[in-house]
Length: 585
Image 1: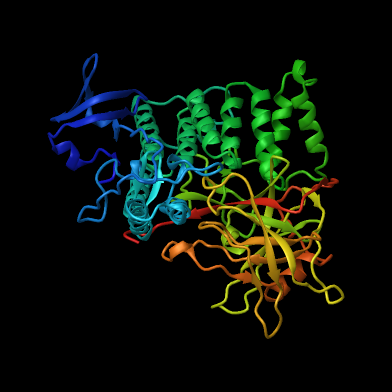
Image 2 (image 1 turned 45 degrees about the vertical axis):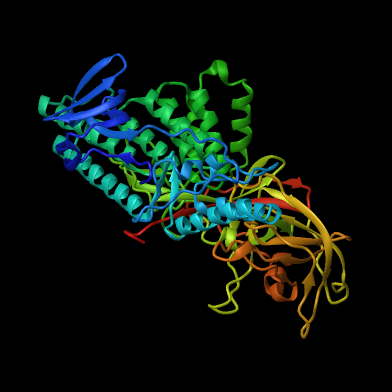
């Protein structure tokens, strides 16, 4: 079976079977490694330095020791699935991977598809015989895992059932934390006082137990980037601000494009009176969500708390320059303070019609993420207007947040509404809008200057981030086609590359090569040329001077600024999506 986190449950507590080489996490934050055995209401950990006896009630989870994942070669023997459809422990971690300059390392893959694509890329150049057979077996094995929708989180490969089980554990633990918190009673009337409320011994016990349950809930979440955030929130409630800061920092390292993680980091640092550090975190949250009234408020309020000796620092001056472009104050109060009734966490996937809204919850509890895991996709986009980029529709469809990488900086953008010719014919490309930069549009064919057969260059990129870090270019020829004749091109994509633009020798966009991302098909799909005629309505909208960049919601922060120029014919577009599983699906 796959190596998984073995969570303490009644069944496990009743078992006397030892767990070898596991890691035990306790509610007090202690961690023990060794052989675990249950005896009555005690958990015994046989460590190198001796035996540790723990009360089973304080054991949050027992985690399997991580497997060191070596960089494997393509010819590695495939794992043999067991009758239940999973593989023996460690098989997935040592399966093959095609390694090349700019290609991915096995440990970075969080789903089977990138591994399939990289093996598909290796197959044509493999020697006929044993080598090609082994690669094909790897493809077949990982196709089965892709069909089962396995996803990797940390060192574990989980099934949809695992994700739903972890979600239920989270909600159960959070419900228990809320129940215990309710038993403490309402202490909000004391929250504005500098003197903490006086609690009875029973209230203190309930409060401490609720905090323990909240930490358990955070650790139960399967997706690691979201788990770091939830643990940070849980430790904030426990007033363990240094521990919360460490959790948020892990979140920043794991998912540097999530504004909510920087928000949490700033709040934890502010609670430790490190206002300049908090200001830096809040500025990054505002940069990632520049229309967020909440992020703006946090920056402004923290600037007031910065000591006078630090107001000449470059960071403070940058903050002052940043807030100057905002013309109106937020129309809603900050909800990040623990003295208010609600909290707005600036995580992707908030409710309502506004893309600026985050997760709003009561201030005395934790948010419940609206998805089980976060996923990241990428594609090459082409600027067709001063603020518009046309890009592969599959990459940005359903995106919670979108960014464009410009001069090494991730610039926030928004997805425009796509045009569907019919429900059975979804758009092949989509338009995204960004206000932070002024782009130099790439030319497109017109009636006066139609597309002519000639030479062109395709700009391609793997749809999943770990696959390719740089845009791949390849030169070839193309024929634009017409109403009665389909277009054609000699340009081809590699397996796993998203729908990619073709730029002609004179610098015009002359079409796209359809993405090859179907793992069930050999080579991940056929080579198809997408003509300009077939996407004319989307191109027209993107090139129109009347293209809208979207209306701000009533609670958005308003700005007046001059966008910086950005040069380039192609840009990498990143999309953050949420994935939700149903039990057994």
